Image 1 (tube, one colour):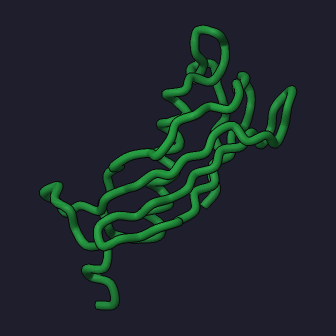
Image 2 (cartoon, one colour; image 1 turned 180 degrees about the vertical axis):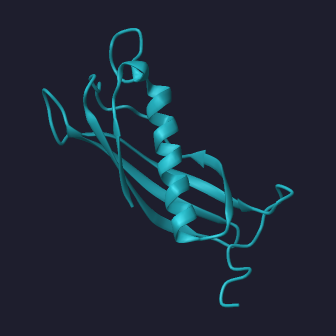
Image 3 (cartoon, helix red, strand yellow; image 1 turned 135 degrees about the vertical axis):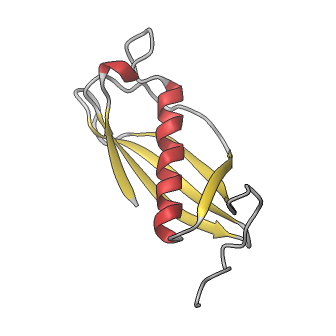
Length: 122
């Protein structure tokens, strides 16, 4: 699943570049949206990311692309690889800036782990 974000002034750190925490929020949201689309009606929470390593700065006005692909699935969890590219930049377009794996856990209404397969095929 692909989605995009426009880097605006409120997304910048004190040096004038995309704040790392904002990028992590968008990565988490991308994985969550992919999980919800792949598993309609299920609830998810993020269990973790495998690595956080920023490859370069992202400037104001850039359009950032997120590509989330399912790479693993267990009974109650699913993992997505999220690759982040700058789709439109003033200086260096199409360079990868971030990549990680996000694991989400399926939960019930009480917040307990819930099988991804329950309710499938009924």
